[in-house]
Image (cartoon, rainbow, N blue to C red; front, side, top):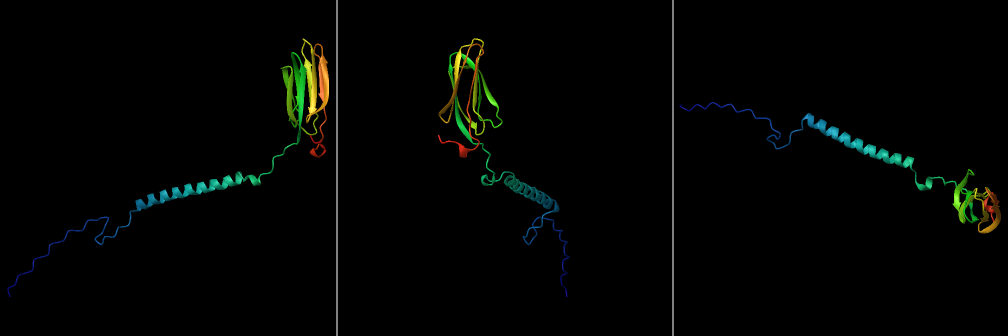
Length: 176
């Protein structure tokens, strides 16, 4: 039998590692890629959580307009102060100040007129003081358009004061 002897098999080279095996399916990512993906996912989740938390805090700290208590407003009455005459005078008058603090106008040029709101229960008052040049000036006071009082100052450093009375509540306020 003279047959040929089979040729010895040549050793096959070892397959090199690749990202895609012969079957065509992808190989799982290496652990370092997982760590990067986990970090970026955590960062995105943290940012989303912070945004949600901010919206919740905004809702707690700044409630809707309907939830706010109405602002306390003191009822007022319209008062007109008027000073007639020539030259200048220092004028002190009561305006919208719940503390009762007066407003002062130094060396106001006459004639002078001012309409303000005065809190109910406060007495509207206007005072005039003439300077060392003297002269004559007259103050008048009107509440809601109705004349209440007038007074005249004359001479050097002459003084005059006009005062009215406002009710303490809107229910007792006469209609204008």
